[in-house]
Length: 286
Image (cartoon, rainbow, N blue to C red):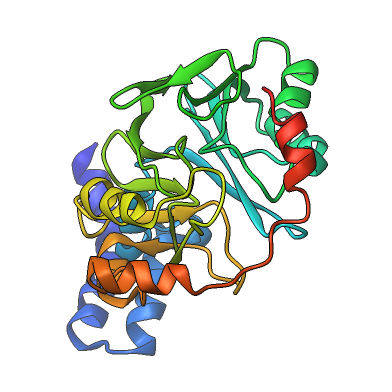
């Protein structure tokens, strides 16, 4: 049988070898197409390019991941899921976009296990309570230092598991006492809430804010992660979606300063209070 197959393929193989020896540029691409067609392969299903494979590994090696945006408060909500067990976690849901999030969860055939807040938000109302009512079995989670109620109260070193994946809790107070950063088990991603933003950080002038505490949290709990670790914040106001630990250590205009310089910067931001802070204090119970 093998001899017969070889005889059949001889002309094609000879042609391919001759082309390979001389081909460059467009002719090499034509050769690739010839080989795919000859073997019955769909040219649209060629092996994954190396850079694509690297991107997949950097995103958690097959984990389901979606970054969602709420435009009024410029808040990012993150959906992470295990493609095998279908268990999922939702980070920082917003009340006004709960239906959007549920639709996506159902479309992807995921089972939401935990809806977690990185802190008690001042600029929007969390969607966690409504999410629990609409998706049976969902549990809420927030830091035990947040002052909010939830099914799961998080502290340093805790883990939120979903299938074979997990998010590890690092307490990063300073913006509020109840801020946490959620780090992927392989340290490929970190969800930093309002502690570390892209080229910025959370304000420290209300709700237990402390500039010295925030500076220490970022430098000891976030900047100690691998340099390639992707940084996903809770907000961005300039259209940026992701950064890395190395980028922020090098380019963040506030966190590259000394502690004294950082405190001075934060003391002179003179930002207006968030419009929903009063309503937030009365409704952000999970």
